[in-house]
Length: 250
Image (cartoon, rainbow, N blue to C red; front, top):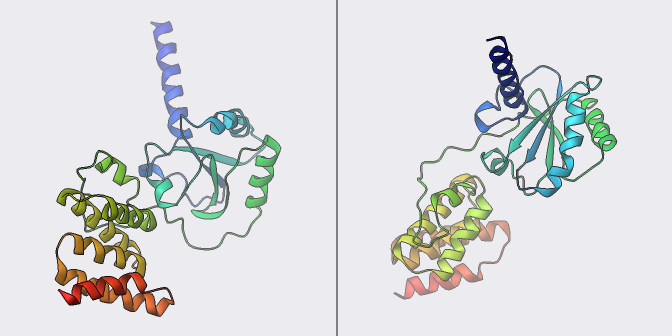
């Protein structure tokens, strides 16, 4: 019985350690965002990442060093969307955070002394600025999967908080695919892009998608809006003017 108790207790300790080491979208508030004046590192990683494997002993060594007042939290980018919201484009990436505010970041493999230097540098900084905007903007739109094998809800979820990538994918669908299901997917993508950040480029994409869906009334309305926004920002209106001419001629 004593042996069984020791094994069970050891497993509980291991589980607790793992829970403290990793964070998820749901546990960000109680960990990284805590206002306790301690410097924290949010370390974006993934099981398949080669450079991250190189960094593993470095991170472990610093985490276990009681002379360094820091907590390092790992986040698996495969299982969370915080990295998408914060536009983390490569791993390993490290965010240096205190009292819920980002002080800086780095995206490279480094030796232990360099990482300690960065931690100390950011720890000495004045804490200012807004809270880390890790929560995604809610949407009134549902994710719509397309007919194409790559246009799955799971794949689209990875882009759902990035207006540029949503728009780029919508435009690619418009240029290359023809089924109504794919076009409905494209419309959902560009609507979300506009919801996040309305710009001339995503209004232009929406106008073209609507045109291909044969909704010419809404296409013209959106195209005219895109032209005005492009003109205000000083960007070219050539492409959208061509679409307007087509629509007005019909």
